[in-house]
Image (cartoon, rainbow, N blue to C red; front, side):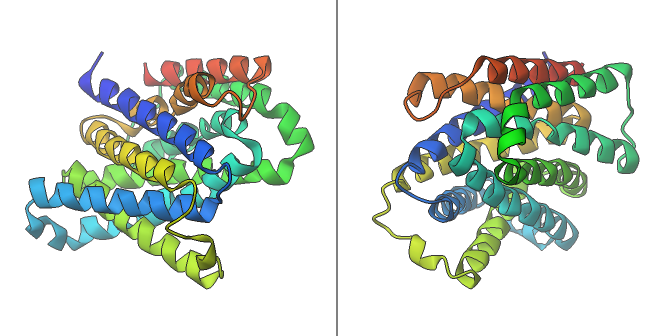
Length: 284
């Protein structure tokens, strides 16, 4: 397996574990606190890595900073707001399968705008992804369409952000810088949104979920770097689908650590595995 594929799968494992920590932290807390503290942790960790590994002159490359900044607003900024709301309302087991539509979107954009090539395996994998998502989520889509809309919105935004990140890395090939700009811009945007919507009071140092959010932020910071490193050397149409094996990792971690908070039905397992099979086929 190519190194960029290993890094993409490692990023997926980090994101999957982070989602479980967020879900655990939301028990007695709220999505606004989870968003604020996790993005704050991302920003601090990534800034420390920039100081250690990146020439600060790279931050003067305005084109790359602008691209990573816009991508950061889209994801994790807006996408994480929607995802954490979805995690609170319907849980990991039903949020996760929806996220695998992201590579469908990112691959389409990469083919149209970045000159990547579409193959039979990508098309076949895309159909498996859609089928798996539908099978895993059909009950909730029938009963809670408004709640599931948060998961769909997050997946769409992640799919749009991935090709933007790839383009930015073609301007400046620095995964650490890309991760810092992405995380910091997302943190500033989320803080402003939380403030303007009057939800600042929901963020407190004594929040019962804060330790889970900080650990989640550490894991997503590692995921950022691995994701950007994989994108730096690989195509969006390969890296994107592999990163979206996140739901499979998340379901395993749910069973291991927070089974008491939510149940995973047979339909969800089967649907997720079918969707992940499609993701793997796309990567081939």
